Length: 321
Image (cartoon, rainbow, N blue to C red; front, side, top):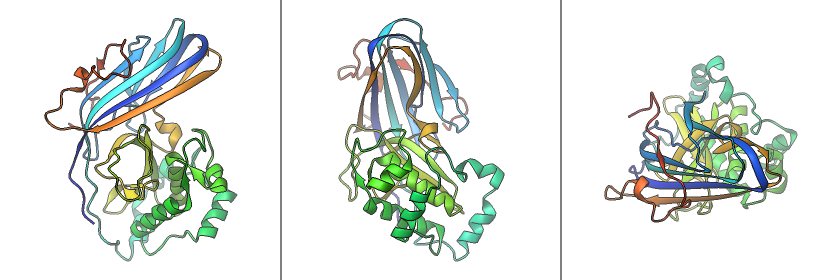
């Protein structure tokens, strides 16, 4: 296989929380700044928050760039808009299959204490009777080598499930998609991670975006964030596989955050004091950019939020330059 060339994308992400009655305060953690590793580069990043708030930058235990903010006054909604100018990495060049003793090499290379968080069950990616029944019914077993086994697993999950927005929620367990056969990208990803971990392959969840290009297998809709998985393999490092779209993670994929599962990489997470029932509207736009594109901070002619001032956020300390 051969990789694609790097590409540049402009990504806008709006999360707009509307409350039934005025909230008296809110606290939120954001994981919206794309990662700067694995060949991915971030040229610029801005945040807009309405009502106005001053975000504090920090890095979590998985190396994700995070922002924390709070609002200490009555407000009827909280809107967060991020904009990123990102150069993505191409898909890696891969062998047709790995060496004959690759499973043994993987077992020797994986250090239980170093990789335990990506080998042990987690909240959304864990063994269950439903998962055991599913893998048995589909004949999903590890094959001759880890690489071909993962590629075949991703293809099998793409074929086994129906992509159906709204069929699951962000906190749905894997049993939901296993029993109904319908789900979204995070469900495909959690199932693949749970199976790969049972094979002894360190597996982690990646949240981000995909630029649709009409390639075979694409089914993630426009206007949505995305999720896929990465797997640690001998001599190849962390390899991204997207079972929802039956593809390697390639130039179309913008990596934002990673963790054990969705709980570690959610774009927004927080608490609201008061407010009653709430409703969340999410809009995502991913456009291909070029060297002639204006800086994202000047793209206010097409804003999602018109009454908030963009806050430039530079590279986090220690990020690859």
